[in-house]
Length: 455
Image (tube, rainbow, N blue to C red; front, side, top):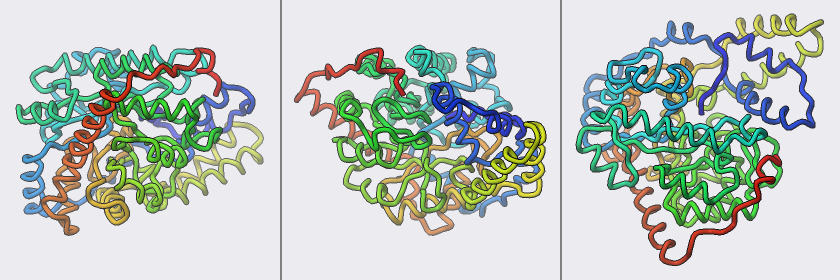
């Protein structure tokens, strides 16, 4: 997801100190995305770059990793380039000059090739504040259109993929197979007709929620209302199974994760999540859910964001929240409270993530779920300057796989994590869809438009 947090920490704290009416929809839409800020490190990008002295991997291991990644496509589950092109370049993919290298971004075409990215799910992110104004469907379409226009602007390097077979064919041609994932189930506005049209446009996963609980599914960072999926939520999952679209359970509550794994007939994905046993963050996957994954055949695509992966960030965030609460209660005004919090943060910098930290999450998922259920979901161009040390952009995947080799992962293990696990799950998902399309017709379970905004 795009973490649209200002570079200046004080502005983030400003939002946390402003009071809201707890009964208003506006409060829910505006404050719960900000809970991510409360749980994530606020580190100036310049400071992070200055300390990005992660040692280069052993040259032999790096060469071995690079060779392995030339044999299988690196498949990344989540990249927010479409949102960044909309925000930084006015929606003009040509102005972004992705073919020449783009220092304002973590993604461009030369670095995709350097990182051996054979397939990328581009995120079509749907803002939470689009819900109360009934603009979610329009925004989802805008982001899908942006992803497609990026692909169309650079046909020499990108091509739209609609299937696992397309990924294999396009990657062998030396291009990056481009798929689309809608980030936020509110984008369909409770319409399974819209979901079906998303599929026709090339969408191959939908994240059931973002940070706001919907009328049919609870979000990880919002209050639970349903303690899982509602009957309509279950129908969304079933229709995604029938279409051949991955059900993505990043961002949802743990109860929704469990319900999806109970209902889904096809493998699911976590497009960009990590292990909760390593970092106790609601966006990460608890062990009991990891243990359910082998039966389903799904894949956890490990997120790189330090707010989900840096060891100790959960404790640091709790301490910082306590400081914020004290400052709000004791300071005479908002500016004074902000100054107190800034001073504390200068003296207590947030823990940093690193190549090793990401590998730790992979280690844990392998231990609990197994090697067949791990992938990569970087969240590049959603995490901005707040990246793990040693993994600053899409060119750096070989560094991570060299670290896995150093830890004793086999060549076959590396290939599975890089992309073969996702390809296997996608082929299973497509086979399930083919069967279900023979067995049942499209669902007629659309909700009324009025129900969409009742959150």
